[in-house]
Length: 373
Image 1 (cartoon, helix red, strand yellow):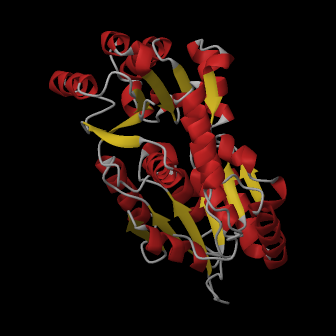
Image 2 (cartoon, rainbow, N blue to C red):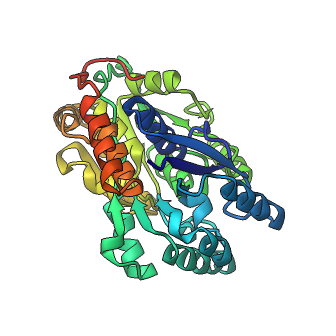
């Protein structure tokens, strides 16, 4: 039976949603007895040097000829057509969201990425999209037939319900995501500045390393707004610390301009948190209306109004928290996500039976009240 070689650029341990998705696939496959291994690609993607492309080709060529090459979209979308063509019969592309849709790209860079991704995707044996939104985008903007795209939405671990801050003085807001332009934190700061008379504090958990200039601008904007004592940039945090931040939060907020999915929204649902979010992707569509207030992306006034509404209304916050907790039990689990991707990669009959047996034999538990790993 062929195995899965999961080619991922950069640091797989980086605390981002995309890398978290990749790590979890590898973990679930290992636990289910699926033959899979991580292949580390250069970290310069999606803007690789010629030397890094040559290294990538050498690494892929060194794999066994019957291995399936599952390539994370951060690299795959930047593959030159010739590189994708060389391994065309073995390639499966995992697309979190098209690279050209990243906020902050110049028009020239966005056009180049759109062209390279379109040409590379044509060479893929199959494509896995991490949300129906991404699937629809690949169909509409990249001309990929629907039958060639499988959807494997991120799973979510059962978790205990958030305790909250326990403060009668100030509501504790939480936002999670790297400090990059697409996350719209400048819009969030503008919104919070408009409601500075309300009792709130904000923690943003996210690495500043992916866009240092954006992170510096965010720090400067917080200082100019006079909010340095109320907004804490926690940086990239580990799983235990992130779980603690969710547990201590009273309200979750996501201000993103675009998300292929937005895993943090389902993580907030899993903790029973009321949510204010932008309508920026599939995750926002997944969150039930009873649990969240949803506003247009990039609209600071609408975001401020939604935040003020829930800060001012404890009863409504409780109702939305209850709705979030009720919805948490219906969230997809990671074992199902991993099974879908493995089925796509290992599509011959013998391999499919092995995949099904591995996940069928994996013990199932009702863990809704346990602490997350």
